[in-house]
Length: 129
Image (tube, rainbow, N blue to C red; front, side, top):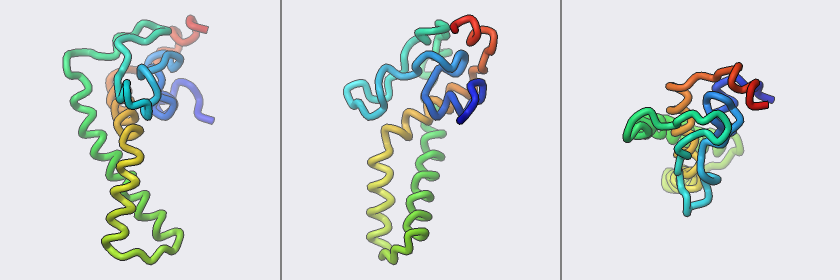
């Protein structure tokens, strides 16, 4: 299991980058009514998640990289399973995997972006316990 305090923990579990206890999003990424909506502040440590207006616009660059990783993973999985797909079928598999994982890609991208600017604070995390 990933230890609290690592950026990977916050990214994978979509928690507050500073305390790793509060939730980062309003709802699950697949709940489309609140799609990709970041909370204004951490409910546990009161960290303001947005440094400036349009702060998460930069996460679209991260989203591109994560999307490429998902596409490559879909391609590699078709090779590992020994599927002999035509170019068209392979294209459909990759596009379908991107469509299915789109909410997750958007959420993880925002979490990665936030973790680039906020650091884990062990003292604050201990006070919250």
